[in-house]
Length: 335
Image (cartoon, rainbow, N blue to C red; front, side, top):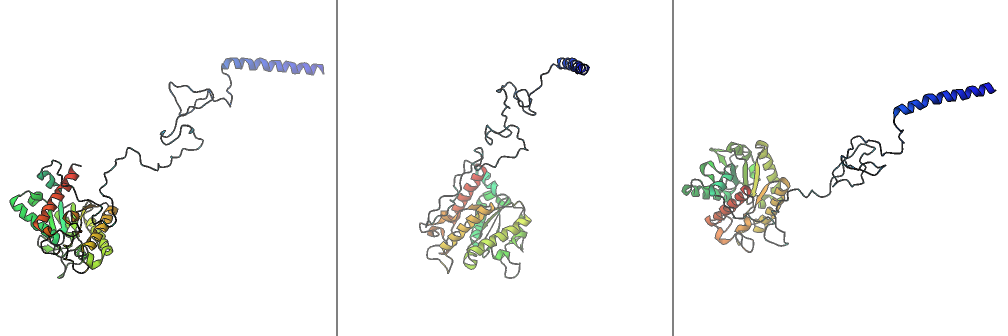
């Protein structure tokens, strides 16, 4: 019994003598699993900073604007993106509204006519905006074409002259019959002597800006909703052949007081213009309000701007067109 106990003491002494030198050679103190003050965190470095003992440096994974300061710097699960902010960042560009408040019962459209301010640009600079444009429309636009042609006789550079704005216009053309096949009854404009559908003639002009004025031959015949549908169909066919086309929709202008014919009234054309504004907003097209600049206090075409007691317009009216379109171009060139 005494011998066995002596052997146990001898064995314990031998183990102790072996263990102590190993500890002395390591020079390290074992780290507690609960003490994080001496643990380096992968990917977390804070040069020149100090933190209370036992804490992990608070380094946000996302910008401080989207994650609060108490967000763990090293989540236990893979990081997930923060939710999208409910409001756009303040650095986003704010565009100036192009509309004015809608007043119930108002005879004015919510999109104001263009300013006539040319912003110090020369006529040649302004007219260059229309060098790749084609005006498309009915008899009102036909009157505009004739006006421009006459002006070009005195000023060869008016709206770009012979190398400037072009025209595909016809007296009875509308968004509806523009979709018809070419036949003996069709009213498609001619281009280089041939009558053809707009989606075939426009590519031949090399125009990238298509400035459209329809409504007089549509609203009373088809109604507003169907007219807008026809606009959409027509624009889709044109865009299929000219993918980079830009559409500009001119407002339908009004009827002179007392010149109403059946359903064709200023009120109906104003309703169409309101629908066209919505159509343009939904599709990213420009809407240019000429109607209000030519209207009287009752929302009809001013007598001084009417050439036939109905809807067709005088030289004075097209002078207004010129001023508005010059101002519109200037605003695009020097916003």
